[in-house]
Image (tube, rainbow, N blue to C red; front, side, top):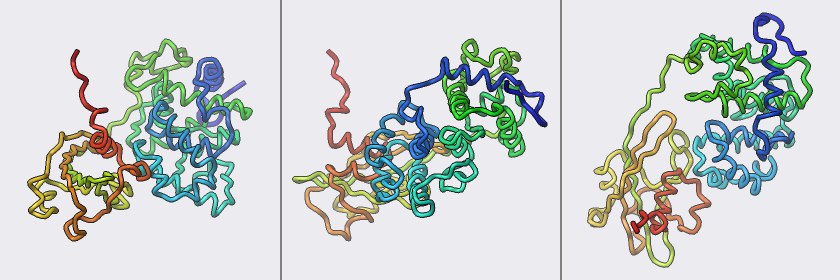
Length: 370
C-alpha cells in the first residue's frame, strides 16, 4: 500500500495508486516510444516532445530513427544533417544539444547512457525532468518528472498557492513531487506512474478546459473542490513578447537548376546555425545590400507572421529573380543552394514554406470557386 512519509505526511496517500490504476486503464498507449527501455529512444522522444504536440513529433521521431538508429549513428553525423532533419520542429537548440549529448555519450561513456537521473543530468541538454523520465522509464528509478503538465496537475490537486515564478515555490513543488512517489514500486509501476503524470496533464487536466469528470483525482483534488481549478498553477510573472519585423532577401537564380542564395545564421539567437536568406531590419537596408541596377526587379511578396516563444516575427520577403550568376562582389555573404538539395539544409519552418511556394506555386494557390 502506498503512503506518503516524512515532512509531507499530509499529502494524499492515494495519489500514486489512483494514477497508476488510471494510466493502465485509460492512459495513452501504442506510441512508438512507449513500452521500451532503450534510453536512446526514450531520450530522443523526451527531447522532441518538449513544448511540441505528440502528433507533430511522430513523423520526426520515425525519420530520426530511420537515419540515426542509435546514439553512435547520431554522434557520427554532420551537424547540418541533424539540423536538416529537425527543420520545422522548432526550438532548434534542442537539436544542437541532442547532437552534442550523443557525442558526449559516445566519447566519454562508450555509448552507454547513465542509469540514474543524477548521472543523466550531467549530459548536455538534459535537465532534471528529462533525466527523471529516462531514469524512470528505462531503469525503474524512483524519481518524479516535474514538467509543465505535472506542475499543473500537482498544483491543482493540492491547491498549491506558491508562485511558480519564484525559485523557492518551484523547489517546494519538486520536493512534493518526490514525496508523492509510490513506495517500493516495481519498474512497471514506475513506468505507469510516470506515463500517467504525462497523460493526465496532456489529456485531462489541461490548461484551459480541464475535464474534471474524467479525472481519477476528482475525489482528492482541492482545486476541483474549490470550484476554480484553472486558478492553478499560480504564476505572476507574465511572458513579455517582443514584436519584430524582418526583411528577407530571396535571391533566386534560374536556368537549368533553381538555386537560392542562403547564409548560415549566427551560432546564437533566433534560428541559430540554420540556413536562411539574408535578413535585414528594414526594406531600405535590404535594398542597400544590392547593386543599384538590380533594384527594379525586386518584388515584395506577402508578409508572413511567425510566433516564437518570446517574440512575434513579421517576415517581409523581397524576391529577386536572376538569369545569370552574378559576381561574388555583388552578393551579400552566403552561398547558392540548389533547390533539389534544400532538404539537406536546416531551414526555419517559415523559410522552408516560402521556398516551397516559389518552387511549387500551384500547390499553394487558393482553390477556385466552382
